[in-house]
Length: 120
Image 1 (tube, rainbow, N blue to C red):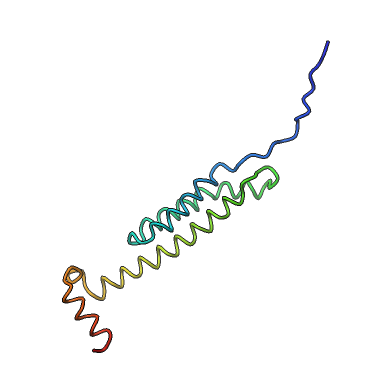
Image 2 (image 1 turned 120 degrees about the vertical axis):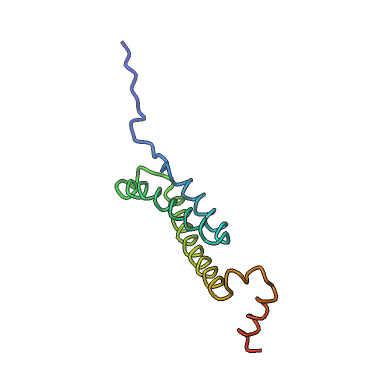
């Protein structure tokens, strides 16, 4: 009677399940930062939240996973996207508070305010 031996008993490294979605959300958060900053903040925050579990799993057993670089780059891109989203949101808040919501469609009023700002 022959017994088959399985010589492949070592654990094969697996991929972190949320590394690619985190990377995609990070890229999208940077691309969409000019949409008033809101989409960038949402996508960046979601990317950081879904990467949290994978980061904990990787820190527990680093030899088990292969695509930690994608997760790390995705997290960095999410943070950059959040910062750009906050800056864009702050810019639009300043724009609305300085020119007023009613003057944003009036180009003559905007030009007059810009001349005042430049000191002319």
